[in-house]
Length: 363
Ligand code: PMP
Image (cartoon, rainbow, N blue to C red; front, side, top):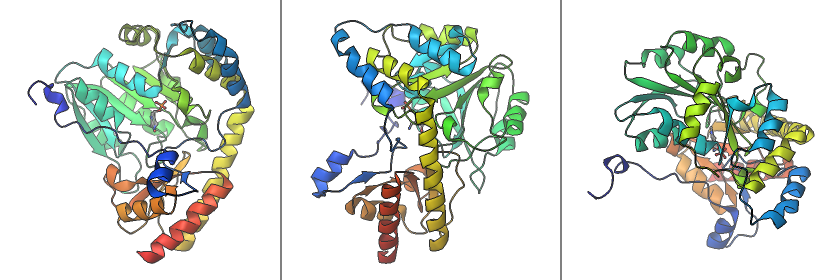
């Protein structure tokens, strides 16, 4: 293994939720539903599908490396300027670019735990060290502990709100407490992949702080916009930070189909509202079912919910899988009795609840 870089030795590859067709094939099932990757059950907006169809004749032309049209659409929607934006091949790519732009060997990075694993991956590949700060027992942020974890070597702090996998969030007061009590040169990444689903009155968005602090906000088209297959997300930060992140970006990192699909999707805010509605319905249905079953759950601001099955989550996961329901097992997040479930369509939610009841009765 000596020909491999040292930092790769302990790195475990990301294991995504299994695709539906693979589960059908492997388990010989006809009906399989996937509530494992926080995808949008009503799909993409018709306008974005039409936009990509129209582009097929342009397949031989390189994409616009600057994503001009898409940036313009975002500018109109979010009141930021073009030079405060960077578009990525999913927000995953931007997490990697941030690490490449700002982390030297031996630097320290702070991230909540449990949270999205890509923060660990991106930092580790740069030979930086991640200090995981546990969420509190109710899975809300431990603000004091986040601040206390800062050392003179801390270069970057990841915050995820709504947090994956818990659905918990940062309030304005909490975010400001963090920003005002850490050195101002630390880059604070606010991952807001699930922003569109948040409903709390005091929910904080990092956009309000990009000019006063070194805050980078991450948003994506994979969730509320239903464009996960295209791989397109974006970062919002001061012009200065965007300038440096652009230095490590590949020239044509976002393909043309993703660009036109995302541009059309922004114009169709009705579709985003429909996506929100379906999540609110799912919340009601699943919260009720969990209460009936006596299962504690974490109130969520995302399109998914983290629930304590009170059984070994690997067993629950496997039994659900064999019944054609794919969820995320909490053991990968260090919570061995929890599962994370994405809200689906009304029909999918019913299937999940019925199968869960039967699985729990068996265990
Ligand atoms: N951040 C969080 C918190 C996520 O849950 C995800 C999707 N799993 C991403 C970022 C990445 O999203 P994408 O690369 O599809 O934009």
